[in-house]
Image (cartoon, rainbow, N blue to C red):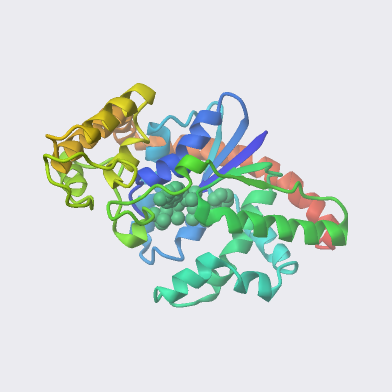
Length: 321
Ligand code: ADP
Ligand code: TRP
């Protein structure tokens, strides 16, 4: 299967990004054709400062590689290094009704939160559709919030195919139920924009401090506690195997421990889980030129595929003479 993932370089990666998207990609490298890119054009809609966007782009690349992305297996590049996607974005705009874009939850949510509604925010799904269908992607693994965007890519591809004959493969989203929405420290969806994230890489003290802020109920120490409704448990679940999880559930049932203990445990489990990745990250941080050359190599490969596809599209649409 051809699997494609895009991640915006719009801040520090958090564990919602990891379980909702990054890990799914990394796990598929052995069995599928995986394409992964850093969506820096998309990130422009929220990161308005040049040096910051540039810094986040390198940081995202470094983090992806540290988390196990294997550039020998996976084509890995920065969106802006393959400009064909912008050309396709324009062409696809001809097949995108205003109504389709007006129905986008993500756009409506961002506007409701006070982001100014400029054209890039509105047409964001068209660029995302171009990212996806330019490479004849079959599967797009995403968190729940991105399902509608993948469906829109499909709708746009259908419209194009109807007009010009079968050109694009129709992509499908893939969401795993148990990680569809990783909760943040307040129990709402973990998201940079809600300020409720636990970052993958960060100073240990800071992570400890954030974990301490996880919202719980007020069941006293000497009473059994309900793990099903507990945010600490929901997060620990992502890191523990079956036995680990059962042992943790037993601690909830047994009076004597409080949420403070469970938070310490969550920290330890999480810190251990990411230990090997932290070590790899240190290597890549000290070798940023190697990261740049990996991205360049990926972009060269992606461009070849993109150019070949664009030739067909230009010819069908008459953007040729
Ligand atoms: P944020 O909401 O923090 O801005 P992004 O929108 O950049 O995160 O998301 C990047 C990827 O991570 C997307 O595929 C998205 O679906 C996934 N993702 C983000 N937050 C979560 C979450 N809380 N649970 C599951 N997946 C998530
Ligand atoms: N919109 C996606 C997000 O916020 C990022 C993205 C851009 C993407 N282009 C993509 C994801 C193509 C998958 C495929 O997470």
